[in-house]
Image 1 (cartoon, rainbow, N blue to C red):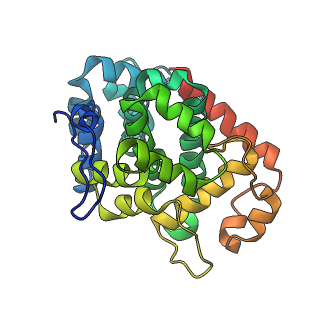
Image 2 (image 1 turned 135 degrees about the vertical axis):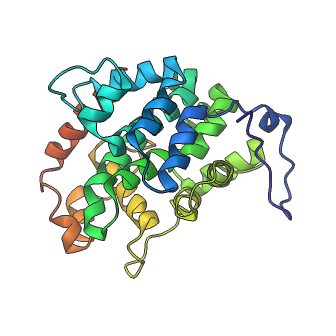
Length: 288
């Protein structure tokens, strides 16, 4: 698909630096999987053929599919076997996970970016658990969780060391972080993510997720995909998967009490139990 050029919308004051014209492309297979997913039900053979066009990508997908996260009864040696064992929908989300991790590349070596990656995965897994409360497809919820901070990933790809330092310096305030991003890059990570999602021709519901996940979730907010991701982000923080470790977060018990009853019922009251479950799943993905 070529390099993606991030550009300001008309009327924006800042000038986007040359780095945006050289933004490395997101793995083509992952983008195509996403596009297939929104154009109706993808047929298993389509998914197999698509993933198999990139042997290195297919190998990473198989590593995750054979990990403890999915506890398969037998190891898959081909994408066809993985689809048969896990199902097409789960493979779509897995491709997105592998794609974002591959896109992040060496930036993951910085502790700040590693924390951010773990936060994304925790959000995705929590979102999948909550999805049923709002009649939202759990695989769509998982994908949205992985992608909600893809704008940060894009900025980290451009300038890994500088962006990691920015994350650490402004960890106490989202508003401060967004302003610092605009000063360094010409746009913040929410706008960067929105533009990437638009370039990938994904639904507007995904644009809303990446553009608005820092806005306040009101009690009267519609229970949609964007609201679900906001709740997932909030829940990830107090159990040890904050994007900015050290930030003050609401206690888990207090947060649960503020959620709709149908969401509360989906979670064990012990935060440590949930943390352990998520940590094991995240470790399985991190090890590929």
